[in-house]
Length: 433
Figure 1 (tube, rainbow, N blue to C red):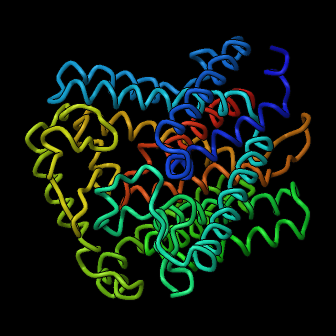
Figure 2: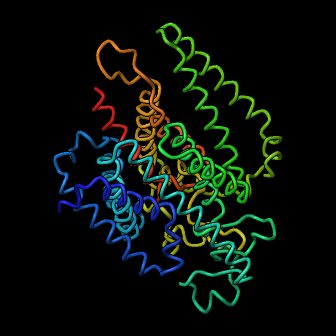
Figure 3: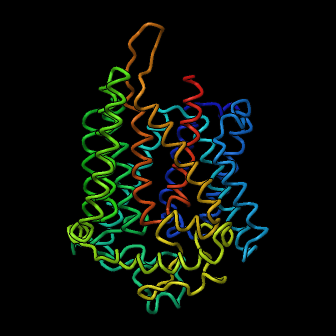
């Protein structure tokens, strides 16, 4: 049990948790769903042991109340769910994802979390490049996951392939995560993490430079319009933080807040006015690659149960009503709303939106305050700003931009990051107080 208290073990465990959350398909496509289940069982069991060993830290005071409320509401939704069996599975999956994330968020410091994230992301990105090179030069054909059945192999849809062997054709690669959009998001997260590592001087200059170039290369090879929007959003939010850090008096801070709010309103207005031109610039049609039609269908369904929703399931189970054959694009059944907020409304109603919104907003506010307040080492000192404190608000910005076009914020790695950032920011805020 003493091993569970080792900082090195905890950081290594966090690396495994983050790798599995962000690249779950790497496990599923290589060692099957059964093998993935074994890996998940080991991670959850270890997380429970860690939480029990550190039970003095694991208190309700350290866990964000909106997170508790969200999990409670999802669990209670089984009672009114249109598909109670599927909701029970969805709630179980949510807790399985939450428990390891809680262990990481409660017990790792900011620098340890940065180190674990950096390691996990380097492994994912380097393995993705190596995987695509092997497919391109050795296999020389698209690759299906090991769990694909004989029927799947007869005429597989494009979205089923683990890799479509597109590296040499200049098209979007999928990497070990098996999805170009998800790999692009991992690339954006990596760009943020590697940049913060360089700013915090937690890695060498060569390692940091190579890592940043690797993240940029992954983003270029996936070419996701959502990620381009995410880069802009992260850059704007970073500029706002740096502006606030330069405001040294209450009056200057108030003026800076006014400038930030006015600039945000102006950018939003211009984006709405020139929406078509901006979409054309990133190679997207006005219907956002079919997403607008998906959103219309989801909104119509959510309006039938607007207050408490149809019941929590996270990703849609394709074997139950109303999700079976609800939306099919290019021969592939869609398993989420391509918008996290619409998915929450659909599954938990307006009440769920309020609770989940509270989780996101409180986390963002705490992260903003931690990033814009000086750390005072001793009374009377002017204090300094921490480079590591930039990690949480910038990652949250990227996750929020993605949540407008994908539902990943509710599942696996992106949900894990939300839980980790919500928990670690609360622990850090309580510690600072």
